[in-house]
Image (cartoon, rainbow, N blue to C red; front, side, top):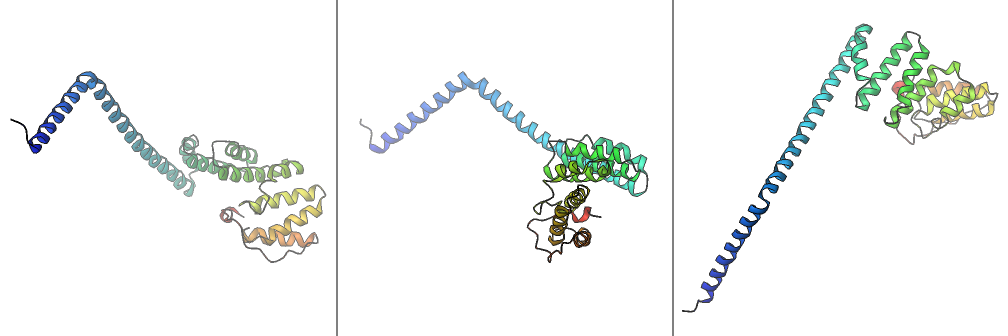
Length: 240
């Protein structure tokens, strides 16, 4: 007896489903081991990634506690106690902690009047190509300040020329050192121009601008009113 269209469609669906089951069974017999191995590797990789993320979070928290411990010790004048955690953080694989530790180590040396040691510590950050440029630029400014009296004026100009511009967040400090170097080079015209630009730049810390106004006036330059900043500066809290 012939199949009706409805029965024919149902029969075809059953054949199609049976064929699919046979294909799956065949694939399972042929590739089952490899598929299982791939799933295991995928799960292991995902588990490893989760562990790494967790490990990194725990490691960052531990280093944050170490930095806080060092700051607490320094706040209580326990400089020797702060040495160990700072030494650990100075070798951190995290840029922020590594830079912070070395900056603090350098400041401790500055407080001991060890300018050479402080400059060397700042230089470690300035010369670390893996560090973000913001850390390196700040370290270069502070290194130069620490060893300023031992440097030739032209060396100061060459070292800080790229930071002694209005676009630099360190224009105040870098520009001031370059301007003084110009005076030592008997280039009062360049010094007066630099001091004038510093005095006119609103993003430069007020204390530096006031000094620049006085120096510019002494060199025959009358600065205009401060101009609005073109970039944000993080120098204000480091000025003094």
